[in-house]
Structures are given as structure tokens and as C-alpha cells.
Image (tube, rainbow, N blue to C red):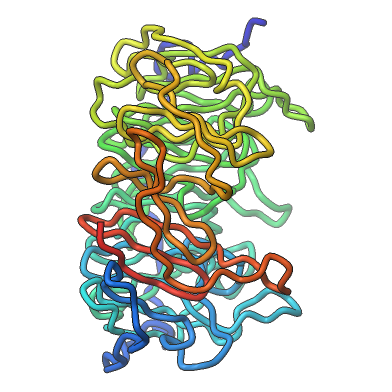
Length: 466
């Protein structure tokens, strides 16, 4: 089946208009970020811990109330999605904590907290900040978050919080921002023009500072109506390769100039869950722009819009992690492996054509069979089966270190040895709820953070030895 690609993706860079713009912002003197509270002296939990656990804090201990839970700051701190995460600020782990209201799913009296990465102690706490999303990466040492502002749909408020102290400020913007991202030094945002009749014109992609959003460049977005499926990761930048993800629409852009280098979206070529792989490539599953969104293939796209590799198999790979031992190992695109640099075909396997998850770790790709816990490891260089295993319970692999792939099962961190598929470590952080309990899910995951492994769930945050 031939695929019709939009003109911006046909190998040539699209022509865009990049203009300077001065954006009026208002320094907001709301008490929301006036001063940070004094650091608390709350100590980590004194409960006995396994020797592999450096420290562990419960949400109830951090918040000071029974039934408290951690949340996901990427999705803000107003609504409790049932998931938990943290923002890694090096010496500090920043997260939200509050009392979930079972009636409406919101957080009652949420707090934003900074926990010391070394021992879990509370470095700062803010009870006065309400935001709708926060970027995954810091901006010049500060967490940058977005709030809809007082006039819903017509303005936004950007909130900055110093990662080390909790101090910060807010800036009001006189139009709605639908997504933000940062490369560490500059702020990227997408917004619409609002008139009495509603949204007008094409969306604008801007690069600048908090106080002047378009100070470096402003580009007109080539697509139509947008929404940020995940506001925290809607805009990410890797070197000069910018990626914007908006539901079934995605763009690649040059972060230095603002030029849109490729576009996928309505009405010609919708996509599903584009994700980054090394070196500077984006892999996306192509789909027909219809309600059914049937898959038509998977492509790896370079920063200039060039399709490096493509698999025509109509499969959705459910990617979990891309952590190859080095860049000489192939990348997985659909049901096939391709050279990461040249895009040359290496091998394919029917075991990758239907999965519940695919993880590239070290020198293998681990595929989870649909509907079961059965896993198969394929040699990344040849596609040959290395080993098969039925671990009983198997959840997405989210970290890789020292020849071990890490995942969580309820409140336990488990590992798979890449050489033979055996379980080498099992570290219980907290009891796993009974599957028939009223609330059986912890939303747990394990993440690599420097030389640490961090366990996060709605109930606990803990650091585990590698």
C-alpha cells in the first residue's frame, strides 16, 4: 500500500515564516509563588527497609495525613490521575502529594514538594501552587509549569519554581498556551489566537524566555486544530531536533531556526505515539486518519524529515524503553531491525508483529506476547531467539543497568538478566495490594536516575541500589 506523505515530509524542508515577536506578559504578584516556606525537618521513614533500599518515603509521611497519595506533576496537581511520577532535578526529586477525592478524582489541598535525592528528607514544600501541567525538564534550574489562569480559555499563567529552594514567581500570558517544553535554557510553547468567535488562525510555535515567549523565533504551525495528549512531554528537544506531539499529529522542527522539518497529521497521515530513539531519530506508527485509525506501518524519521527506515507491517509495537548497549546495535521499527545510522535492513521476526510490549535493552530486544506474561528475548544483531521465559507476572521494562532489565510488579522491583532471562533480584518496597481490593493499583515504576534507581508509586518514593 502506498502512503501519501504531506509535502513537508517529502525529503525537503518546508518553507515556514519565522518572525520576531514581542509578547506582552504580566508579572503576577499572586501569593501563589511569593516566597518558599522554611525547609521542613521531616526525616525519612524509620520503618525497617531491605538492605538494597537506601531510603523510602510514604506519601502519608511526606504530606502528614492518612490516605495521602503521590501524583504526577506532568499532569499538574489539580487532578489525581491514579499515576505517580517525579521530576528529576539531580539533587532533588520534585513531586506532588495530596488527598485524592473519590467523588470527582481531584486532589484536595495538593502540595508540591522537593525531596533530597541523597536521603529523602523534605527540602521544601509548597501548599499554595495549583497547576495543570509541568515540563519534564528544568528551565535554568527551575521547574516550569502551566496553569489555565483565571479566565479559562483566554489566558495562561506560567509558574516557575526553583528546584532547590521552592521559591518562584508566576507570569500571566494574555492567550491560551496548550503545550510547553524546554531544552534547559529556552522555553518552547504552542498557542492559539483567541477572538470573540473562538480560536482563530493557525497555532503558533514559539521559542524564547518566560518573560518574552517569542524572543528567539515564532513559527506558524502547519497543522489544524491541536491538543496536547500529554502536556508535560508534548514538546521535547534533543540537540537541534525538536519534536512536538499532539495526539494523532506530530511535527519535527529545528530548534535553532524554528523551521518545521516534517509534519504528520490530519488529513493525510495521522500517527500514534511518536517516541525518540538514539541517535536523534523519532519512530512513529502510521495510521489512517479515521475514527478507527488502522495502522499502515512504522517509520523512523530523521531531524530533516528524511525517512531513515520503514516497516510496512500494520502493527503497533507498544514501545517500553530504548536502551541499547551501544549505537552499533540495530533499532527496532515495527517488526524489523534496521541499522541506526544508515537505515539498512538487518532482520525481521514474526515475534515482533504482535506484542504487548517491546523493550530494547543491552544487546537484546525483549518482546512480551499479547494476553500472557510469556517473554522472548531476540539477539539485536541477528534476530535469533536467545531465551524464552514465563515469569508469571510481567510489566513494562522501564530501566536498564549492568546487564539487568528492571520493572515493577505491584510494590516490588524485579529484574531480568539479559543473558538468560532469569530473575536475579526481587526487592519489596511496599506490600502489593490484593488484586480484588477496592484500589488494587499502585501505579508503580522504576526509573534510572544517574547512579540510582528510583521507585515511585502513589504510596511511596524510594531509592534502590543498582
